[in-house]
Length: 153
Length: 216
Image: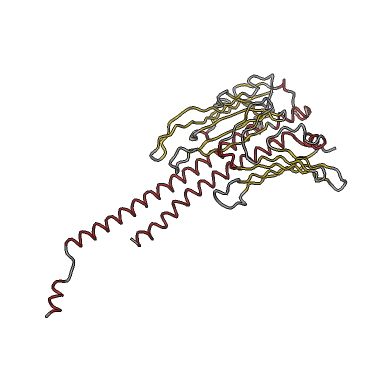
């Protein structure tokens, strides 16, 4: 029986690796989709829109999650502790799969000053992390960034 | 004398041999079963990952098309349309044909139809996604079958977005779980049109759409 047990060990390992590998690929792919989505929102709002939002304290900014404007740091943050459905401009609910609540999404827009003290670039960075450490390291996350440029005069 | 007698009596009885043979057979059967289950799981896992990879590639193509979307209101079929059930989407995108002398637009259609597929020993309800540039089918889509494909249009912060969702069946799990890929794409060209009309190289009335390929 000992021999049978030892022979089964690599089979179990293979089986478990196959399941885990597939699940990891799925998690990663979904997180990339969420991160891309947030960058698309930031891109649509654009340089002018973010600048206006910064000036008015983000009161008219319509994005999912909690919005925080840090004037001193030149930063606007939109945080979703759990990615879940949100209302669009018309009040219609935009749905996500149930598994999306396992993810946390944060969009950070940083106003970057050049040497003249003028903001010509806004750096957008989105981070999607896992709320539950079901698999893999708790440090697992997907991070993407982009730059929004002001008009060149 | 005693040693010789013992030597004559040594060996296995028929019962012992039968028991040992049965045990060995049982061990071989168990090992074989585990090997078969393991191989099957690895095969299904690979197929599942391949399904996610295909969904990713398809999503990238749709994202690329949506990013070159043109919302030309006066042109035929210019307004982007998403079916109420989310099963199809139609819009115009700028013609990527670099050899064309003048810019034009091509009508893009994505549509789904229900199909039944067999994966492993399971029969699954799925949807087949087809894409068309004008009348020409997008070849890469011919083999793509997913658990779910859904398009949604919504407005956020005053801008239009197109949400694309793909469902890929979980083949290794016992229950009918679906793995999802989902993202939203904003139509950048349309945004540029709204915020800075001079960005457009041509006025919208100069376009017309004919048989999927536009000309000015």
